[in-house]
Image (cartoon, rainbow, N blue to C red; front, side, top):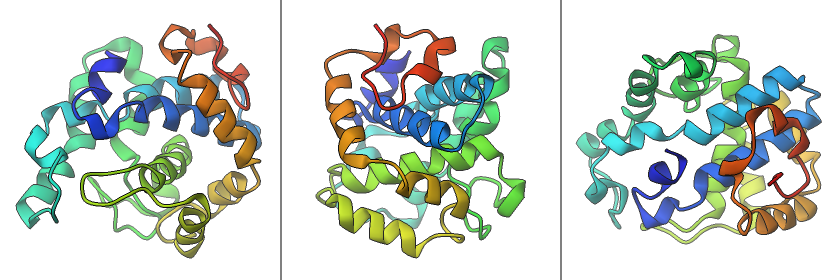
Length: 207
């Protein structure tokens, strides 16, 4: 399942693994317990499953999306929720999948939640998701360097991104974390057991 999600477009290859790895690192910085880290792991790995319902032509479009195309993309958290809802084993991560694009200022999607209405773990994943999106190449732009991405995220603290989660992210040693991500690219996270998620932060994933 995990490889299928990111294989939808070459531009998103490895995205779920990188986001999950970074989210776990942030979670450890926030001192989340093992149950929360396990949910963050499983929710992170499937957070974009709803993009399977988005046409590849839209995901790979090099120009600006039209209003209609943007609305289609913005359906993916809800589509992911609907796909996973019948599966009992994903029940506890549905809030992460549905709400990872919500914003503290209420301008996110799909439900326009604001502040503490947004599930806590979705707020954690959102910071990791945004960082990876900003620093990765996309069909419509090249990836930003680390400092530019961090500056943009800091500017969005409290409005675009949860301020407490962002503070935890900024406290990470990103050089070490990016090295760990590089190591992770050669060791698939798909073989890691969810209950081992709390051992992944700052290290290559357990085999």
